Length: 329
View 1: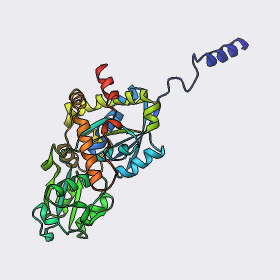
View 2 (view 1 turned 90 degrees about the horizontal axis):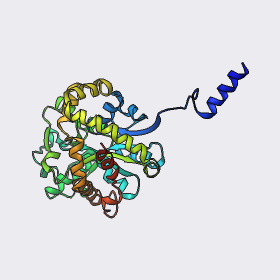
View 3 (view 1 turned 30 degrees about the vertical axis):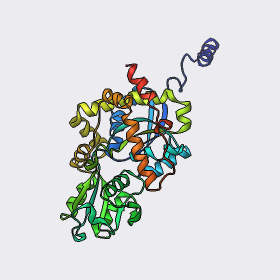
View 4 (view 1 turned 135 degrees about the vertical axis):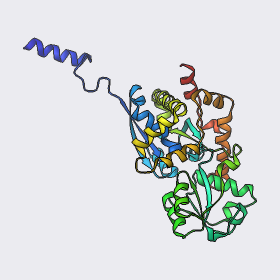
């Protein structure tokens, strides 16, 4: 018996077995917004086991908009954040590093008017109250659309609230206009039959392209690039499955993460975004397109007063992690 005890102790000391920590997955706290353009690849990776294959345990933490999510990233509540236009905001001010791009929000944002607002075109919104979420993809689109039509959005009455509240206010008639994102437009069309869509993001593509992606906290980026590379590997597998088998992938995402809404809402959200294969993203990283798109959204944040001076995206966008992973395949 003594010999058995000695062997047991020796094996534990040498790490040969019996340790509950041996080979344990490393946990990564991932903050996300619950909209397909942001969390689609995340759910495929989680439910297909692609993160687990990389030795990662994902702890998903949901947020209602990019602003509180970036505050959580800054405070250390999450290691990594996935979001839309806000990747061009806080990181430019030194909060986090952008390391992975999800998609192009090609047509996710849109501006609606109630029938009694008597608005048929963008210029008709001048002087009317608009509900949206300030500092988000919807706000960036709204500013871009108004500016293109000679209207200074900073001089208009923009009421900021969470998006569900903004849409509810529009449906009830409390506000005449709402700037929202997919799939809320489905709800608007069902409950306000006479609502007029004055414009959507595709009207300003690619000059006003809005891209979403993954941001690591400064500490995580500095100290755990090994885990960021593993995240990229799992993401790439999930992304290419989503692009290559969209119908099958959307059904999985719907059943696992969006079963409380109709599948048609998920399909509508998919139709409003543009996803590239991982291979095609390599080209867009290398030729400067991604950096350009991040920078042009950052300029909008400067114009609306969300941030101060414009900062070159090269200072807060790190493409090397994604490119290193893709080129090692």
